[in-house]
Each structure stands twice: as structure tokens, then as C-alpha cells.
Amino acid sequence: METNTSKNRFITGFTGLRALAVICVILYHLNQNIFSGGYLGVPVFLTLSGYLVTDHLINEYQSTGHFRYGHFWYKRLKRLYPTLIVMLFATATYITLFQRNLLANLWQSVVTNLAYVYNWYEIANGQSYFQNFAGSESPFTHLWTLAIEGQFYLIWPLIIVILLYLFNKNKHGRLNKKSVFFVAIGLSILSAILMAVLFKPGTDPSRVYYGTDTRMFSILLGAALAVIWPSSRTVKNSDQGQKIFFDIVGLVGVVGMVWLIFTVGAQSKFLYRGGMVLFSLFTVLIMWAILSNIGKWNWLMTNPIFDWIGSRSYEIYVYQLPVFIFFEDKFKNVADHQLLYAVIEILLIVGISELSYRFVEVPFGKYDYKQLFSELYHFMSHTRIREIILGILAIIGGVGILQSTTVNPKQANHTELANRIQKNAKTEKENNKNLAKDIKSGKKVKSSNKDQSQLEKNGLTTAQVKEAQNLSGTAVGDSVMLAGHDDLQKIFPRFYIDTQVSRQPAAAVPDIKSLANQGLLGKNVIIGLGTNGNISPETMKQIMDIAGPKRNVFWINVHIPTETWQNSVNAMLKDSQKKYKNLYIIDWNDYINQHPSWLYSDQAHPNNQGAPKYATFVAQNVLKHAIK
Image (cartoon, rainbow, N blue to C red):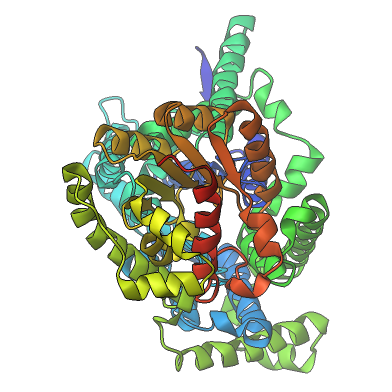
């Protein structure tokens, strides 16, 4: 394949790829059911960054024989820092004025983001990407990726310069770049192995999701592509065969990316044991097809719409999560207004991003900061609307940041709901150890007289309490069931209850199968899944097949009005009841709609008053059709 080289060129198709990546991220936050892998837009950003930075570094070293490390960082900070700073202070301003429950950890979030170490701060403080209770979700959670890129900008240029210095010229007098390629590939493999090893199925994967060490393969695969196909390289006198080749390469990349975006959830075992690496490789393929500049892919990715979105993708990305969190904190009935609220949120994100791009990124990116102090007086004496707004954000946001230093930093992870979840999880773990032995040995377990008296006060009759104590069974659920665990266990002392926070319906299938294999799946099976995502017909079939026709399955439908999938989950359960004769739907959604005060502010988890009501309601429905 004949090629020629020239100076670095601007790859227009990369802007389109950025546009598609940020669209995927937005769609993921709007509807995780349909776009279950939309979060994979992030590896696209990382892979592109790895390519562009490496391409720039090698080209500069090849042209000049050295690399200006300080100048490189100055240019990066000029482009990225103004938008980040304004976003941090604007978000802090909103929190200070309207959502003060998020003040905890605010100053730490701001400082660690400015230092580009926020992902490690999240890991060190146990901040989960997947677990958020009662309006405690941080509007900065998504900024972990900016931290990884900042660390890459700091370390990777030094590695490249050292490698190019040690292995400078080959025998033909050209720059020897093989060492950079092999180090990039070697570190990518190491990173992928770390991700696979550190991932523990059934536990919160946030450590693996956030870690620089476990995510750097995306960046480094892009870096490796920059070595073997720099931006200066173009195909000369391409023939039809070459065009077809790159069209196929791009098609494989796009089809592979689309497949994973629509099929792989953020807690999937496959994702952490090869899936995310595979997605990054698919991204490299489409990037290669675009870089070749022959065939159709660069043309397809280059259009005014993609150019507009892609050029503002940084702003769209940093502002999208605060908009989602703040909007949905005020308008909680998302399930009933999915399309309307989605349109409003998108318009807000686009509008804020456009303002940020025009009045922050572009002007501050071109500003000569060497003359900052000499022009300070001129700046102060010629204030415009932009300067006034930025000043207000700086003052109010600064006040909020200072106030947050007086707030207990553990408050964000120790809300009343979070504490209840942690306490019940500990109780469940301890109880299940002994209960498993008792179930296998046939030993009967009973509630205390005190428990029986309390259960009757909560609405069960003496006969119902006695019947419940003699039932064998299993309950499998997510954090909603975990919130009511203790009360449910008192009613059904012989039930083996297995709950996990943020449990996806499909992820529970192997757990239910394991319980069956251990002899812990009783005659009556209570399922409380669907809070964290849609239930596919395949998942329903798998669970019902494991239960078999000789067990009765009681599925608690979901009440989570803040999520788009509430209605689709409940409709699916209703339809499934017609298909499976031993499936009974417990209509918790209709019941709790009449008693909203029994829920925490997230409108999903039963509070101290609601947990006994939850357990009692479930028991009353189970006892109607229970197998004795």
C-alpha cells in the first residue's frame, strides 16, 4: 500500500466520532434499558485522546528533536481548564442555593478535579458509580474520566520522550518508534489483565470502573495506532480494493461498537473480562478507517451536525450529569413523562454547552495568560455580562465550597437510607450463615414472641403469622428488598433472603441457580428485581425455568417513578403472569402510590415506617398462594 506523509492534518471524522460518543453517553443517562452500553462512549474519548496526544508528541519530536513539555501542558490547560473551572463553580453555586444536601464532599470534589486525581479520590472514599440513595448522587461522578486523561497527559509524554531518546534512530536515519508501540501494547495488555483480575462478580465494580490502571488500555490502544498510522500518513493513488478494505474495516468497527452498546450492561461480567477491551479495539478499527481518508467513513463522519456536536462534546459531557441530577431532583415523575422530560433535559444541556463553548472555551482558549496581570485593571474596568455572571458564580460557588469544609465528609455516604442498607446487609450476611445450615438440616426456625406481637400490630393475623413461620422459601432482590430485609425475615424466619444493592435482573440469574444447586431454593420464591433496569423475556424465562413448575414464584413489581423503565417493567411482569401459571405479581407499585410517606425521598426505598408495611404487604400476597 503506497502512502505519503505530510504535516499533521485535522481529522474531520474524529469530530464526528466524538459527537457519536457523547450522544451515546447522553442516551445512556436518558434510558439505560435501550442504551444499556451507552456509557461506552467514554472509551471512545479515551482512545481518541491517546491517539491525538501521541501523534502530536511523536510529530514534534521528529520535527525538532525535542519535546516542549511545559508548552504541551500550557496548551492543554488553556483549552480544558476554563470550562472545567466554570462548571465546578456553577455546580457548586447551584448546590449552595438549591440542593444543600450535596454540600458534603464538595470542596474535596473541586480540589481533586482541579488536580486531575478525582477518580482515585472516588476509589479511596468508596464512592460508587452504581449505588446512589435518596438524592445523594454526586453531580461530579462522571469527571473520573477527565482525571484519567489528565494523568495520561502528565506521564505518557515523559515515557515517550525517554523511549525516543533511548531508541532514537534506526539504521535508515528515521525515528525509531517501535519501542513506543510495544510499550503501549504491553501496558494495554497489563491493564486489561488487571481489570479482569480485580473484577469480582456480585460486588460493586466501581474500583475497576474508575481506576487509571484498569482503564488505561483504551488510551494506550489509541497511542499504538498513532505509531503505526500517524495523522500525516495518507494513502496515495488508492485503488478500489483499498477502498473496499477500509470500508470493511470501518464497518466491523461500527457494527461491533453498536452491538456492545445495545447489549452490555455496566455491571456485566463480560464487560470487565474482555468486553471493554473489545470495544476499544472496535473503536481503533473505525479510527483507522477514518484516518485512511479513502472509502466512505471519513465522509460519513463529517457533516455540519456532527461537527457542531463534536466541537462542543467536552462541554456537553461535563454539564450533562449535573443537569440530569438537578432536573430529576425537582421533577421526580420521570416514568410518566419520559419523552417530555428527555427533550427538556437535552435542550438544557445543549443550551448550557453552547454558552460555555462560545463564552468560555473559545475566548479563554485563545487568551494570552502571560499578559493576565497587566490587563487585570482593564478587565475589571470594562466588565460585561459574561464577567458579571462568572463573578457571581465564583463568589456563590466559593462560599459553598468553603461551607462544605464544615460538613462531615462522611455525610454523603451515611444518609439514613444508606445506613439502613448497610445495617441490613450486615444482618443478612450473618443470618444467612446459620440459616443455610438450619435449612439443609431441616431444623425449624421461629420468630420470638416479641416479633410475633409486632407483626400482628403491623397488620398480620395470628393465623397468618403462624403460617408464615412454617413456610420454606427464598427471596432474591435488590436494594428495595434489602431496605425491608429485617422485617421480611421476621415474618418468614425460614426464608433464605439474598439481596444485593444495584442488582440487575439478568445478573441475579446465576445467583438463583446457585441457590437451587445448594438446596436453598424453597417451595416459595419471592423475587424483588427491576428497580435497576428492565427485565427481558429471556431473563424471566431463565428464572422461571430454574424455579420449575413445582415452586410458586411471587414477583414484586417496581415503584421507581424517577426512572424511565418503571412502566415497562411492570407491564412486562403483568404479561408474564399470563404465560406462567405459577407466577404471581405482587402489585407494590399500586399499593405504595397511596402511601408516598412510607418512602425515602428517592421514592423507591421504604423508610423506617414503610419497611414493615412493605414486608407485611408482601407476606399477605404470598400467603394467598403459598405452597405449604
